[in-house]
Length: 199
Image (tube, rainbow, N blue to C red; front, side, top):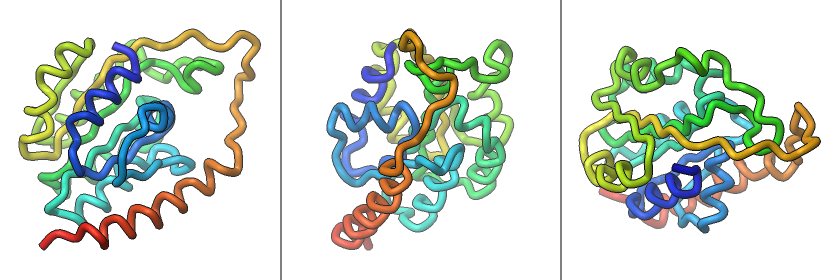
């Protein structure tokens, strides 16, 4: 499956769950015009799970969906243990596994791509349920089960890596707007949550 297919399936199933997305997934959700409530986790590299955990603790009656990247998760693997320690029942953690950093730009290889087992890491840390999907048909067939069960839940999504852009730099500059975006979206999310408060 490709990233857009995976994100579309998640978006169609999430209802009013809070969406925390980072890196490529963030832009994919932009492309499909994902609805509120949502927040992006850039420039908080590797911090999507921790940001999602904070929301899950603050909003225990609302589903929190994190769509992480493989390289991002590797930057802060301790987030898996922290989530597992708190055992948030309302927490679903997707990890987009494409084996590349700066996907579509430089496609630098993700460390340990040949040997790391993300779902295995999550299970060993203490996530209640783990899944792996490699095609959109299987993901679509099981997405309701993934979303409805008790968490924390971890889902490894194997997606194809688009070819790099010819002549792309090996380092990518993050424009100022991406640093500002997280703050803007945090304020919008706070307002949305206050307007849609639950018991």
